[in-house]
Amino acid sequence: GAVVSQHPSWVICKSGTSVKIECRSLDFQATTMFWYRQFPKQSLMLMATSNEGSKATYEQGVEKDKFLINHASLTLSTLTVTSAHPEDSSFYICSARDLGALAKNIQYFGAGTRLSVL
Amino acid sequence: AQSVTQLDSHVSVSEGTPVLLRCNYSSSYSPSLFWYVQHPNKGLQLLLKYTSAATLVKGINGFEAEFKKSETSFHLTKPSAHMSDAAEYFCVVSEGNTGNQFYFGTGTSLTVIP
Image (tube, rainbow over all chains, first blue to last red; front, top):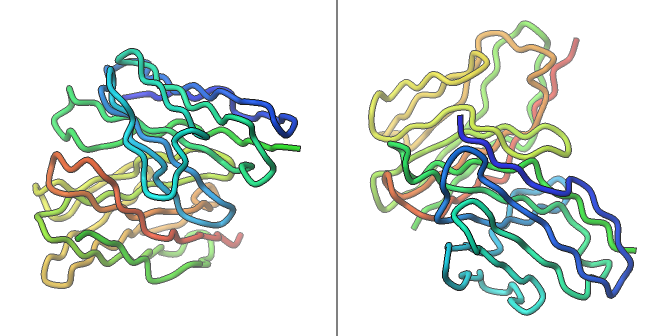
């Protein structure tokens, strides 16, 4: 089945530093990837849609200068949290669509990244 | 507009008894519906999907769901709960077969009592 790898799984950083999270589709090409944020005991909140070779589309209220998204290849999207602050601490999850599949709108999820900003 | 309502935020069952997790949806288009499971500190795993084929959908780990258009429901069931089923479950709706965005329910936490 389609596998999405997300790295790192856990990161602790100091306030003011930047953190990069990688999302890779291992056995399929993903022209579209998604980045979600999940607060404890809550559902997933879509942050942005990442399209290969073009600018990401951000949801309302998400700061594009703070959450930089790059989708440079068909198998890799990155999310960089710039100048992180404690309020950015959260669980970040990526997903990807396999456009080669019959059901093209299925999203396959990474295992998530727990970000803790001190 | 699309939306999903998961009627129970928490469900508790005894091991070996049936599981029922309820989901109602609203969709302007012919929807695709999904159930995902999330174990603690993990990503989401696809349990099953409905994409306009058979209304009774069988998924992994013995789960199944039935699409009922008249009731706008897509409830998840399993005949016999196992301890490993304890997790968070999300019902998701998307537009047709090519809809880009997922609309998530608020999740149902399943506890299995030994």
